[in-house]
Image 1: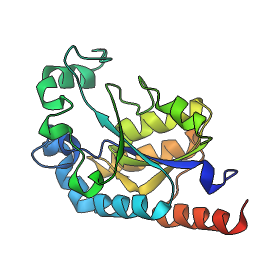
Image 2: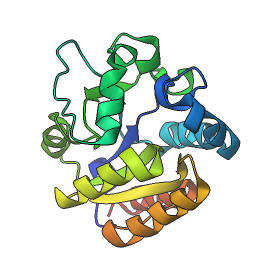
Image 3: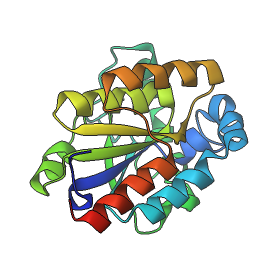
Amino acid sequence: MASTSGRVAVLALHWQVNVIKPEGFFGGMLSEPVARSGVVERAASFHRSAGVPVFFTRFTIPEGEGGLVRNTGFMRAVAEAQEAFRPDAPGSQLIPEMAEGAQTVDNQKLSGLAGTELADLLTGRGIDTLFVTGVATNLTVEQTARHGTDLGFTVHVVSDCVAAADEAVHTASLANLELTTAGCLTADEALERLRTETRSGA
């Protein structure tokens, strides 16, 4: 990785009640596989240990729908349930394991980098490398990782800090990301890379 740790950030995607918890909008689909995978604990530990800025994204729908475009089945479904996605709704809040001191950006897109000034904010801070965590692997994670790559960032998905509703879909998405980004790393591999660069001052 060409960047020093000072040029690295973590993008933590959709760690919110609607996605992760049984009572959330997507709970029936995602909460059980997320809990079974242990991904919440691993990702929370990775965020704490990375020693770089962590930016959380939330999918929310403000009054008037903001930047929401009903051009996919996913977007039509959340639009019909938009009261559950209001910025102050219980389901929109970050889960407790992630909430403390979080820098949070909201949008109405599947990519965490779309429809906000987050990409410009990162570039303005000299950040050119992103580690991505979140749920679901085949949805916001893959969309954001591909988008970030197209914007010129070096993107690594942290493979054991993401999860999907179906293990086969999760595996296929990670295989796609091996080809379309700078490659997937486990949390241990990502942390070791950051430690090595900090020691070397590269």
